[in-house]
Length: 452
Image 1 (tube, rainbow, N blue to C red):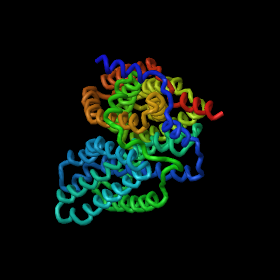
Image 2: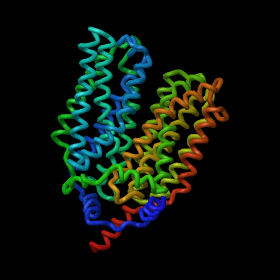
Image 3: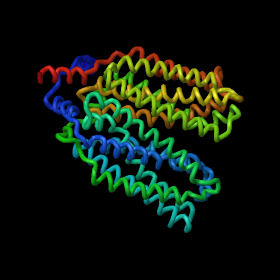
Image 4: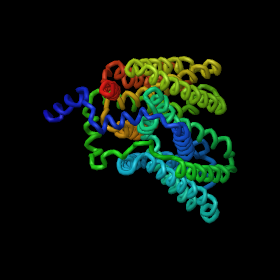
């Protein structure tokens, strides 16, 4: 215990930048003209990967009928992505440290390409022979493509730090982190639009995703490269030891709590929004429109926060403001969630999405700042791994509480009270207590002083 306490005290002190650290921060200032091309590839790769994840979430009954399986097996297609996220994260860290970011993206493309073609061929060749056999092939293809997810979702901070300068870095981090989340909404919407109630259109959806994966793989493998001067990290360092050291840091632990609770609330809200809207008398079309506005607001809020972070670098202030407005937006959403109030609901859900998603780049940036000079992939991996695992248990719990309400789950219901408790005590209170140091900014300022 004394050793852990002593280690935690040492890690809370400002860190003297080592030569390797200074080298990494120097690279972030190299503005290569190809950086926007790299960002385009990175974002499209993240969007497409998540559309594969939620291809069947919007049409579970039609998919179950097409493959002659129970509907609960279709739900396992989404759960499978959560199950392989942790081993995929270890693969991401090993590739990143041994070979660099470009190799990580190339491997992600190969996994995505193989998985998407396996899904398509399973439906095209195996399903006519046997529905369950075709579903087994679909399940395997879904699992292979899912391994690519952490290779993309865990690396936005690494990509932004390698290719972009101090003023652009935070906005790029926001765009890179948001693109997979945008892909989740896009994948669910496309599946609902292309696939009919009788599962007609499934073959078109799978073939289109396989073709897009092929085009993107050719584009990425031929064009995506490491930033000039970038070198792999020390492959001999212990990732597990570094992760455990971060968990000993109280301020990073506060960020971890905020991130987990916020992601759990966002994921459960989007997953259950159809049921929430139905209980208040709204149609599935209304629910889909509201979910789309939530994502549009989220994109705007996240990118706006990223820009302000890069311009001001007021990390703690922006974090507290984003968390406060997210909780306030959640309160307004629950207040407006009542029957025959569609316009008010659509307006508030847009602002709720903007405020909630604006906290994503603020949390990631503060995590990188607080844990510097630990490589950013370690902190982001811890954040996303824990959030993905928590969602496996949190969403069913939220579903159970939602089912306890009779009628609309508006302000004062059991479901709304549960969400408010999580938002206040899991997000807002830790944000008020957070006072971590901006170690990366201190190191960059010190480097600028040495250079001048």
